[in-house]
Length: 60
Length: 474
Image (cartoon, each protein chain N blue to C red):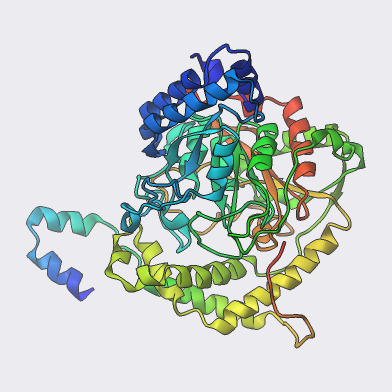
């Protein structure tokens, strides 16, 4: 956000207008990590017991 | 060549070749020129192969003259998603960091098709890296947003975007696509074509970009269920170069399929409530056709699993390992979609214990699907619950919540569920909402492709949705 503000100050008046009208881009890194946290919670909530299952190997 | 050729099925084209109504060179040249001319209109073309294909077509004509027949795909032009290597030509995976990438060997599926005389006329565009990092816009591709032949303001779907639009616009008789979770079914549905996601392991992935070793599949995208059966027969089979290979072949044998009256099809009434209201009449009509072919039907529900989480974790962890060199290089930021780059970067942090837990849950999920398929033979559901979105729409927004809220989740998670369990799916056009196509998906147990194709073929004998042509090219 700091870098974006500095960039805005240096921009032309026309550029400033465009920047002011454009919606801010989402913070994709934060969104990805939030999603990881949600997935971790869902996996933790899914009960899976100690079992005698053989080692995992994927086959249809 | 006239429009009837550009929208003809494989059997008809091969029959006309053998009757010498036209030569392979004439057919290949006509399609290759059409693909070069109209492909860019839909951002569908990654690499034209006109010269190479005409050279190959001459060899096929020599074989036909000597009556060396190699089956229904002999002399048929086709396109391939640009994640399949074609020796000594660029294979970009739809992504700028790989724009100059060249392999020495062709993918197994392309070698198989070449051997029986099918002729590759072009590589087709795709979402960058097949979209595994999670992309926000249709423009997430080296080739620009895939444009839908039914309305170029709408997306062709992903990640097999060019395969979907090229078949729909009559630029190729068939194409190869790939699916990790939805990348054949979704563009087939949005573009109004017939697409088959094979059982995991039935088709070799050697020479294809890996996104997820335990979920990637390669399959045909065609004009009809019958064409999908013919192409699948040609590309399936054991391959020691693919550790996921099931060691099985597929023979398209509609004549030996079980009587349709013996089949039980599972559906969920709630699905209609989840579908966009504009698409509901098409789905209601399609279910009437399904019932009219004589199958029994039964209400079912999907087993309760966190499908979205499982696909996120499995694909995320595997792709992070596959693309680690790219992620740790500065070139990750060359991707067209910033959301996808961020997703890939964050996926390096998925703990091993979570990946393994997700895989263990997958084993339970497969068991639950085996139990489900002890009661029904096939599941039927909307392939997508909406029509293709506008190009300008973000793809990562929340799904609309219908009013009234349906009483159960229905089969909205059938795409991730079927992919996690490695099950085959057939997407068939089943009507229109406005001017946009709508499709059903049929999903069955592992290696039940002939059953899905038998139902799909009968559905297409009774309807003509799969024969409709987009207005811009008809």
